Image (cartoon, rainbow, N blue to C red; front, side, top):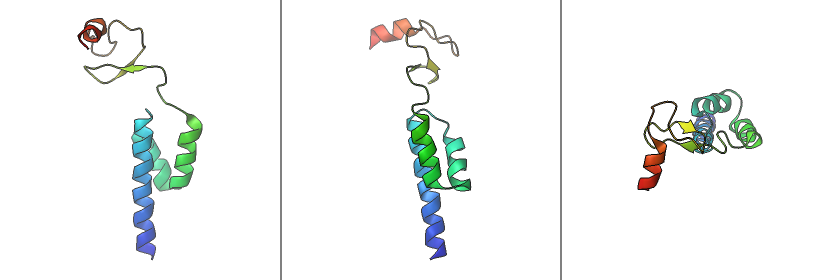
Length: 87
């Protein structure tokens, strides 16, 4: 019984970490929250914190988040305006 609970705890922790990454939060931080405290507590913190990089867009070249009206990525210097015209 104890092994089943341990496996469930780990699986739920990874699930919450994946949801955190999809909401633009740090996956490792939430995985550690869940493993250390509880997957339920990690999920509650995730829901309470809202979207991570809300309002930002992802650079198609380096996948970093930049301002929505940015013309050039501040990380990789990619020309975002030219890439938007192609799509």
